[in-house]
Image (cartoon, rainbow, N blue to C red):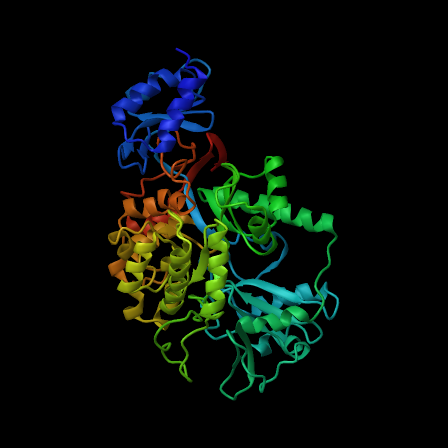
Length: 569
Ligand SMILES: [Zn+2]
């Protein structure tokens, strides 16, 4: 029997509101509704991430949403002539994965020199970096920047730091820079340092450093805020407005394809060109859903025109702000921590990028504008500062369910967790790091690693922690993330902070439903629940039963967004 529009709307609303109904009740409702489902998936091992009915064998999709979830017998009866069916042949189906922190640098992937592998652990040589940049320099006018991306200082076969002398071999006539994938440190050649008028006597500015070698000479490594001086020197490629837009569109369309290849159906974008994003969507080239995190002019426009978090639709929605920097980086060892870093002299405790007063003012302004605050805070000192600013803003201008977002929230302690819980803050914690960056954990030591990327502690405290790859810094493959969260063992076989392990089931929730919660969208996505958007992934193996160290290798067979297949192996 055909269902009326009203019946469907009612059903969808029930799911959206998250009204607790027994599974059999939902099936009964769905039986009426699904006679003309668009798609029926059956014979699957469905992990719904819906605690009311965690496992299922089949489901039906209509108008881009799940309308019924249940057993093969329940759902197969709903197959009608003309609707699409998919026999999953006992493969595993999970909700689409959600990445809550991603810089989505599609243009870099498409157009720039990549000196490291964006997606997987791969060691490169310094010679290969020099060679790639030299080739670029040969096509670049003197005085114009030659840039390399995706460098990782612990994925170098030479087993030493990249330095100014290496980059002088690229060119003496071009300013040359290699950016660490972590985003907080860069390596410059002599020409660049000279153009910026930096020498070994130049003092470190607030929030950054010009690093030196054992002889006290500049080694080319520059951290955090100290890099801003290079923005003002040298030529950069100039593009017309149409070229610029075209590159932005191409980059977004390209990275969208990569996201769905890895099963990501929703990604929180750190800024980017909103106009280009909408054009990509209009052209049908946007395969994943975007929670757009505004910065700069876009954030100012939101504040001045009264646009708040949640504005938009299920494809492009304004989310939290982009990460407002409070401290440095975990992977590059510049985050602000309450004890000195191991083996660095003079004693160094990381970089704080602004004062408490400036941070207070920024948080207050965004919070008052009805926008979800989002700060980048890695170290315990930085997290304390952010919480202090948010507590202050909440006291002055209370707002319910504000869900201040803490990007990274890496090194915690009991007091910070208590305050996070009290504020209803939502951390988006590095997930792929446990696997990908295990070669960096000795810089912190086991004592601190027990409190870093503290998924177990957050879950035990009832904090809805979510996943944030931070791509470029971390690979965005959710399988790599889940494996690392479950094992805490890295690519090199080292295990750090095993006390923070979570179960596969918990890791799955962190990467799906908790991601939806992070952007206030848990009522419409994050689980396979009637009424929610039909975003799901078909996996060749069951991540709950395969060996834990093989989770990252499970084949992604199909990625579906809103009932439409956007990737197929
Ligand atoms: Zn980031």
